[in-house]
Image (cartoon, rainbow over all chains, first blue to last red; front, side):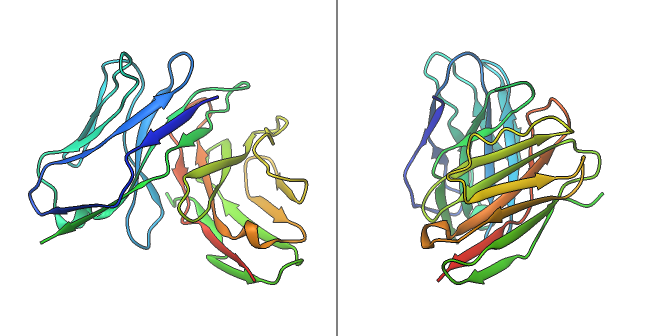
Length: 115
Length: 113
């Protein structure tokens, strides 16, 4: 079946540091790939997505590139801010049974950015 | 318009009691999903509704779990005879038909004592 493995946390960085959170996946065919973010006390929000190989998703300074050859979708940001402190989830979606695009999630990575 | 809403935000119940959790999807979104987030775990898919089609119940962990949805509106997730391992945050998401981008509600935190 489908699965997502992401970097274990927690990750603690200083402001303006470079961020990488690794994510690899197992799936047949061509899934769509997502990063979701959960800020403290808030619901899950879509951060970025990519739907085919070599696509780059980007938002709020974060980027991730869909690498089919390495089955990876690593999240990067060049200079993190305190406000980026949150839990980050990597996920994939592959249509199953008609129009069901159920998501398969990694376990999440807690990022703390210190001033 | 408004996002996905869920109620209650928190629910504390005793083992063996039944609970109902409610989800209001974004207006016009025909697809609705329920997920469960247990402590330290990723989200697990529970059930999927699309319009009037038969739901995909393949993620429901036991027959104590059931869900209903009337047309393209509100959905209710029911857990009968709750157990301590049911303690989790239950998240609802909705999306437009045949798209893969889901929008999540704030969740219901269920605690079974």
